[in-house]
Amino acid sequence: MPILFDIISFAFRGRGKYILIICVVLSLIAKLAGIAPLLGPIASILLSGYFCAVYFQLIQSTATGGKEAPDFPETSNIIEDIIWPMIQIIVVALVSFGPLIGYSIIADDLDYNAFIGYALLGWGVIYFPMAILAVVVLGYTGAQGPHIVIPAIFRAGLLYWLAVFLLLFLYMGQSIISSMLSGQMIIGSLVMSFIGSYALMTNARILGIVYREKQEELNWL
Image 1: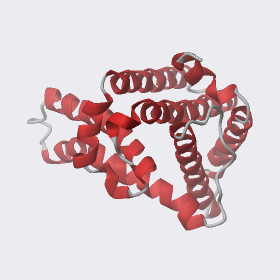
Image 2: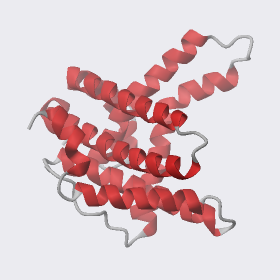
Image 3: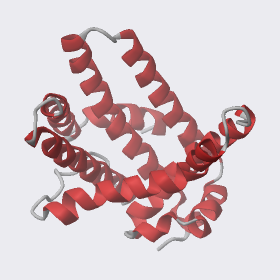
């Protein structure tokens, strides 16, 4: 099966369509829960953590050769199975985009250099996917360090750059559709829940394929 068709159709094959439906429903619930007092924020955090757990499991499944989406992740331990994956993603995001955040804080409005800002943003966009992949495959948060991630980016070669391009295309499309649907609360929420869930599954498939195809070059395990 050609890789691009594999990626595009992943969310609709086998168990993937059931995960997609459940993610859409949970996404709608998370949006409704977010406006509820007291318990709303807690429910939103737990649902966000569950999405992170699904994301990790989809990457792992693809990386180990899975042709279709796996079963739903184990959630018997809330801290380890739901909260911890979310914390790991937050840590990777802070490491990846930390230089941009730091520069934005330190630079005065008058001294802010747009070229430097875009360069640091580009660095984060390139660094983040490989850092997440390293954390998922190697199984510990420290795997997002530059001593692992930077060599891996070069070893993965053209396939990784194509993956980054696909991820950018995916989320730019998501952003454009979101802008088009702004102000349409019901239809907008439904459509964006579907697109967000599809993007989550497709993103995971892309990263898993990078490892599956380049595991010998990466030599992580």
